[in-house]
Image 1: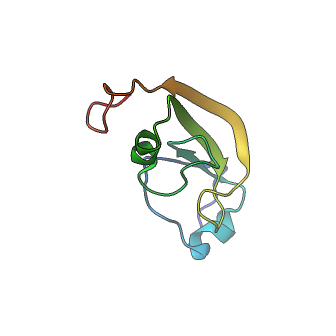
Image 2 (image 1 turned 120 degrees about the vertical axis):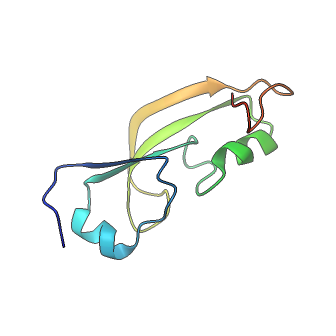
Length: 93
């Protein structure tokens, strides 16, 4: 069943949407991904950033497509600093 809607927002959804979901809602599903795409797509983006030794990371809002974290990005990004040796996955940056 397709629901008539203007926008679907995913935040910490952490699931991959199938083509069956993406196609009918093309251009209407917005995802908030916890990295500055195109860096660290997919799961565990925070861990990937920490492991890479980054000092600055952030989040990216993008439209969902059938390709994981590759949809058109919006210019809405939030940046935050990582304190090397202090910040961890458990306590966050």
